[in-house]
Image: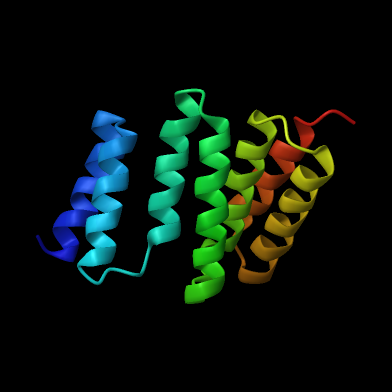
Length: 132
């Protein structure tokens, strides 16, 4: 299968099937086929499905991996999205509020730095859902 076929299947597994096993399998196939770009986005899709299934700890692990991928590949345009979604996963996993706030503050700062106003706003909205 080509890299593009894997991308199509990852998106389909997320949007239509909501199947975390298939998403993970297609992500592995994508990487094995030489795909590198976009893995943080695919991890975000997988984390979304995991959260919807009540698997917050697995979603946290997936997003920590996505954050590592951003740093490894230099895909900094994914940074605010990855950090904001990681914060949501941490919140749902009942993690330390200080860690959640730090993720959101870093997401907002990154969003401002790259001009991603949507993620600045999303970080602020998520921050507002936290207990004072």
